[in-house]
Length: 91
Image (cartoon, helix red, strand yellow):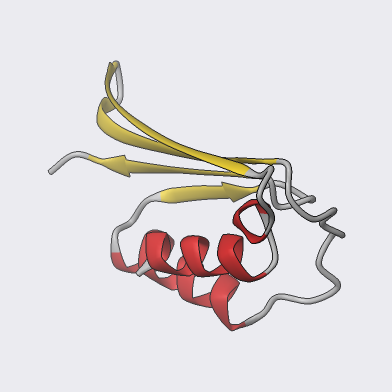
């Protein structure tokens, strides 16, 4: 659900709404002293100029619920939404 929300947002308002915009999505499995984690990184470049949000919309709340509450993971959305990171404890 989170990746779908990010992709739709990039198509409508972000980097994929212009011919010059790009998007990259990477993942990595990290073994740390506190456990094994799946780390997802989503980065947008180019496209429309994005302003910081003035409120938390439905998409943001959906991502928070899916990642933080349902999966017990952490996520970070930058103040200007060009990057998103989620870290999932491997189970």
